[in-house]
Length: 274
Image 1 (cartoon, rainbow, N blue to C red):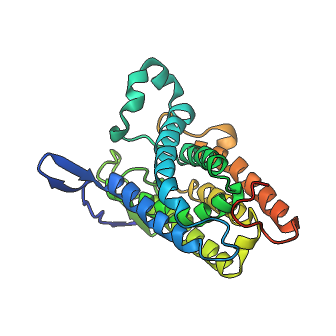
Image 2 (cartoon, helix red, strand yellow):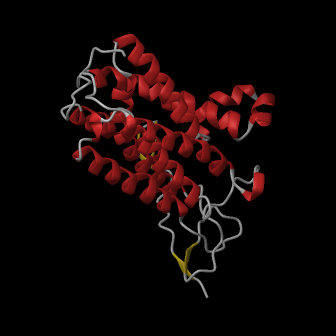
């Protein structure tokens, strides 16, 4: 028999000031970006000090656009291409939800590439620092998913489950948003933090590769507990879209980490575009 836990129905709105309505999801994006920005500035003080702290004051705006544009286009292309083909105007209606992490990641990668080209910064010097800060946003984003009662887990017959008010079946389910917050957010942040203490920043690309491995593996694991999207269900070989998108991401991370560990010599300081 499954013990159903009471869902803390907080509601999607964090607070209202007159006509201004701030939702938890938007607040998670804002706070996540600001905390990640401060953490990135702190990491610039670690050897090899290949990026100046002031660079992240400019990059914050680039990252914001990369996350929003990439996340929305990723959702459109990966999850509902046919729907948005016939309803293109709704692509801009982002306040109704629909963002893809994998799309947001691609958007930020493009933003980082363009930013480093413009400012003469080594690409992996920037990506390694950003990779360390990314789990902060993931942690807050998944908590916001839980507060909104969305992206909940599969029905469970385990000893403990949670009933989400938005679920029409009202079955006890895995609170998979919290599993993701723990693995993609807290655990991955701590792993990268410990690697930084071990001078991983001097190994160009190692932290970026570790992030790709860690997120990909975490997402693949949690997808076994998360309810697939209704309009997609299970895809190739019973895998979900999240798993299919995470597998190449994890393999790329493994290749990048191996390449990084095989490199020798110190990491060049800022100003070298080699």
